Length: 247
Image (cartoon, rainbow, N blue to C red; front, side, top):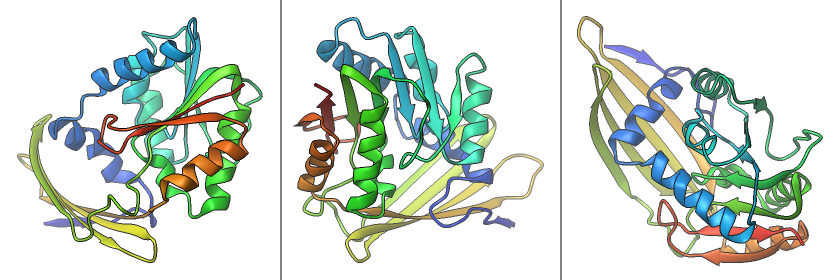
């Protein structure tokens, strides 16, 4: 068995980036449906919305579907390996390399989105404020910011174990995760076994610290960014969505 642990702390890199989509799609994540629902939410608040920036776009699966719904769609991603995958998947789409806390693209969009709880990687209120300020700065007047949060402190389940086995692209992949409480945050450790004919089994691992911001922390960050905000329960992962409109 080959062991691979090629990621920095809190990073989606290397081999993990290559199996990321296979696992989540195999677990039932429907990127096409989520993109359609997101587009409907945006156009419901911004009729005629034509442009969108997806922050922390990962490997670009949402982008691939959103490009069919808006005239101009772009992405922003920090992880070099995720960025490379997003650009490969979306060769006609601009995907910027940047950090959600301090990016400056010199343009604005009808909508700025940040999905799959990527915002939880902000380390505290100051970083959360910085991210929302950057989102708002890239949103045109009357435009909308949509953020999918991580769990709130009162909805997080310490000790949660997740497990899945998926088969895709000739690979059999098992994923096991363990989430625990760590000083106001979730520490989630994830291990993968990847098997395919003619190759040694690979062991991949990743570890992430995701802040358990209360709902009020998100609302404060939206307010400080000058956005009129509402919280919608449910959302694609059951963690809800924050929707902010720039007056």
